[in-house]
Image 1 (cartoon, rainbow, N blue to C red):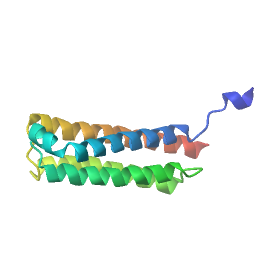
Image 2 (image 1 turned 60 degrees about the vertical axis):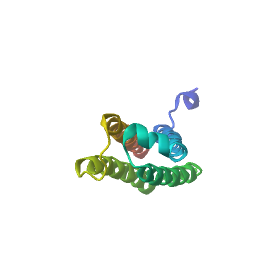
Image 3 (image 1 turned 180 degrees about the horizontal axis):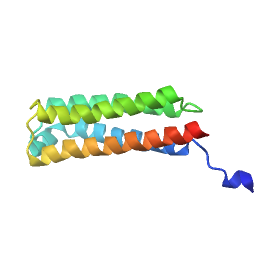
Length: 134
């Protein structure tokens, strides 16, 4: 009975990583498959969308590899959290610095991605804390 009630310490971290991989893969596929129409809709250069889509595919592959490990080490978890926070910062920076000049919908798209990634980083942080407590 006690075994059934026991919570696996890494389950939140692992679920957050899976969600990150699924959403990142979907966003990457969307940006690669529909870069032209998205560019027209968001006023973001198709090349930016394609490059970020490729980055998301590489990220998804990394997360997929990480999820094949029996356990996620704290070092790897911190790496994921750091990269996610860097994505959030870069998303805001490209808007603030004017590297891209999207329309209102494009700005919302970039900020929504940043918000979702920030949530993943937070969930991964709490999952790592829970895992560390054992």
